[in-house]
Length: 71
Image (cartoon, rainbow, N blue to C red; front, side, top):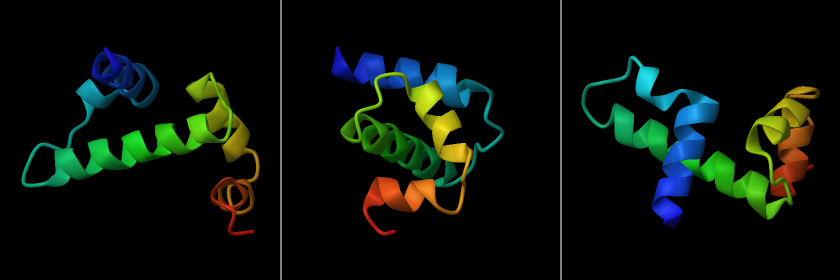
């Protein structure tokens, strides 16, 4: 069930199925990065991933660092 939920979020938010990356380890690496981003947003308390991504994009050089506790 959890894997299905994660896949659904990755597909709808990041349009993973439409990705042009198809060779080598690229698809696995991108899926890992997308999953990591989703996990970090959930840990930070975001229940709506798309809204969390938009919020992080308002200050792209500051807010993601806050999310990781690096600012």
